[in-house]
Image 1: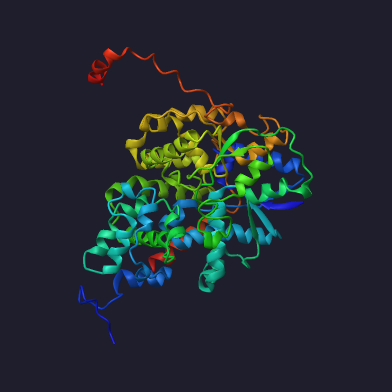
Image 2: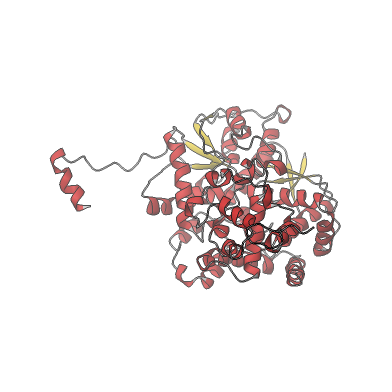
Length: 195
Length: 304
């Protein structure tokens, strides 16, 4: 028998909840809204919705709430510090759910505009790894600034101080297997575009 | 003793002193660290933020390379890399479909039998009875042991120490003659991966952690993670600019504190590479301007 949501009158566990369950094995129904995750989250005060509310949006499964969760600032501010998971009495893997929401939000092009800087940083980071096999810190900062020109002057005064202390390595480490690493990136993209 | 070793990208650049102090301490203890040949980046926060498959495949390649090189234990000094490798290892063990997928991606076999050793576990062995090392110069300071997130969480996967008030680092510090303070922010997050993209938030979080340690009389903060060190040491000027708070508390890697106690030189341990000078006691605050006479106070308040 098909169970319908008494709120939306749609079949329950469809849409995002179903994809989430399939992708991560996480069931949002386990959460009983105690709010411990929001209480312990170091950045909940900066978020547009605290973590427990994001979970509630997914639980309610009402039209419009999915988009609200996927388009929230919350999912990008989440630091993956895992405090919520360590304290959750129901062992809901909220960091895993956040990973899922970020991935889904990028796939659907629904990421919050204010998250641009954060996403640019992640992209610049992964570009460096794809091309050299390892993270090249100086290259990462240059790539990030090219994507975020308004940040061009950020941290420029720190560079000479770091250089004097031998902390800036100016030459990337090109590993012999970098083409194998680049193939991992390519094949992951192929797999994910089939989804 | 010979162990496998995964340095991670930070140790080649901004966390160079962690590598130097680690190798110096390992040398003193007669441990030979053999680097995993051709190792790649673990993907860090960036990978799992945008793709789960990538976040497992990148550490998967590292683990497969270690297996291929015949390594049984691999020392992973960076907490962030340690966490990513441990989580990937856990997910690969639990999910056969994912394992097959990752094997195909990395074009190598993967069995999953490499044991990961974090910095605390390694130093516990270095300072253990069997290594036969003596504390030559006790590190006689009050210290704030800062574990951060990634050494203890998620507890179900890492199964290392208590998640809320861990003790492993405190015990190590007592062994070298330090006095760990009791404080509630051992496992609070410093802001980690948002260091460049949201420096404002990182300054706020890191400032809170420093304030808590200073208030309780710490003379040094001890860390194990290059991300924590970057935020607590390199970001000190941003912290002052964005929060108005000035702290002179030095932030020292665990391996540096242990190295000093074992009689290694400050230079070999890379202490000169920090932006916040490592001196004990920490430099006093810049002297406050002389207190104006009481009757001038309202005028000053108006100026502000």
